[in-house]
Image 1 (spheres, rainbow, N blue to C red):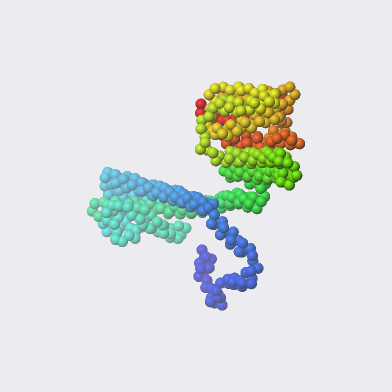
Image 2: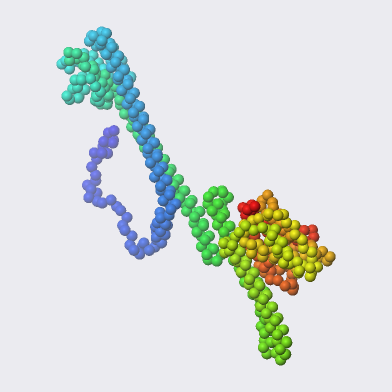
Length: 507
């Protein structure tokens, strides 16, 4: 204590009394230009503060801080109230006991009891004082009435301070007491030293204060880390999107394998990017294949028209050249019509044409249409259809898909003496199926997925009439109706199955 008082009373150095504290001078503009990191840091902080993740973390921190402060205040209030009520209960019990002693033994008996209780070492902190009508002490362990002016004359609670000798020195302690008025001006004061309770409350207050600061610090650090983690994940999505927009379609959002919301979002985004990459790759392939497949027919068409225009042959030869040119034009138109049909099926632009259709009826109609061609080529075509297999869909697109499957079977389904084509329609537990089977050479398993791409033909010579769009249209129609198309081995031959889910079934 003397050293502390000496430090407080020590005057400052006169030589430095008028000096301002040394502060770093403002940096000149040229010096500030040497710190490019300061502008980057400021911009980074501004960017972080303006993000939704930071605002969300700030909101969580505010709620957390209010919750912690509320809990700490409640703990302090309960603790302080408990100490206060314990003191009041002790004083009430003492007053009640002494009042009973007074009722039994009168004033003399009360003085004797107070004197006996005051003779202890006051380890319990209890204070007693009995005074006469003149204020002179008759018994008790405090020397005089506390300094409360004017002195209370009625019963009630009061707070006061008293002096207590400790190690040869007088210390002033707080106390809480109750007054009991005795007839003829006599008074009884029962009190209790509450310095320990005050110290306890201060200790509770300090402990709760530090606990609150630690909790708030942890909450702030946790909110900051959460915000940074969220920003880092969002930044990964942004950087990936920038690279994809720059042309790198193979880039993907990284996943951590935690299966949380960000991982699920990354999975969906990667799936979307995979689909976009497939579409772009397919578009490039379509462009290349269109250029390759249409260049030769257009060249033949032009050559024949030139021959008809400048040739020296007669009218019959010119008619034949024009007829051949018309056939080439029809094949070109068929290719473009197939491309338009595929685009229409994939885009779903004919949704208004959806109706409840009978797959068996569609299969029979397509089979009847191709029976003359099948008879001419030596094929036998039969239909195995269960009645009442209905789905909701586009009759025109479904008919075109079945027609394409039959056309492929008639082109490639012949294998020596085998010339049998079967069209089967049946109801399944999952929905409905339409299957076309032939007895041809089939398709190798390794190439069963690639044949659905546009302009893909497994015939190297590409001499068979066609444009490689038949199965592409079939797959587009299946997807348009919520189904799928699969290829399997018919042992021997090819089995093409169109499967429609139960959601499309209306039977």
